[in-house]
Length: 198
Image (cartoon, rainbow, N blue to C red; front, side, top):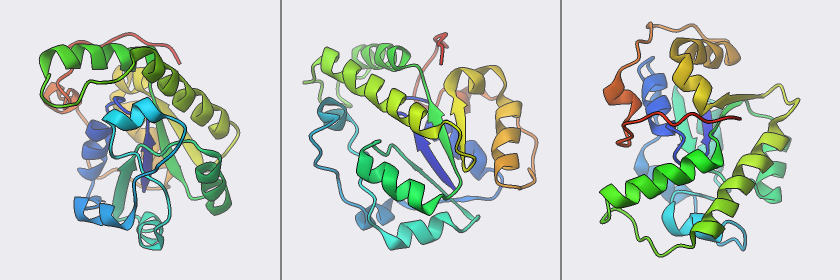
């Protein structure tokens, strides 16, 4: 199972909860199968999110066809990546969040966790990157049956319904019923839900 997510969209929490149904998260050591993108686009985003990867690993793609695994990545919507995905037509979940909401989260996070990231970025360029990421993935996903697009605000409002959609997309039954837990929900330290639009 592949989860492509916008950074700061609660994707880690979503991955964690899907995993509670018996899925294995692909181990961190398997990152060596991928290599960091050196792309002229999304330069500010890459300063902060070092897990934005290129797609070249046959090993990883074989795992994605195995229903026992769940793999979450912030994959850049470059034309090369979109072509690879469109050719494979592998089912996946796309998690998006309003770009400005992501930016506001980062600004808040910066104030509270100054030592976590290097904050030498241009906020306007980063805002451009987030908007580009959001718009290009949203446009690409339209009218594609193999992509299930989930929005952060819907995940917040209807947690169980979101999980139902995900498992239905893969033709799987849920083994457990989901109950929203704040400790899981706010895994990245977010204390306030920011209302956002798609």
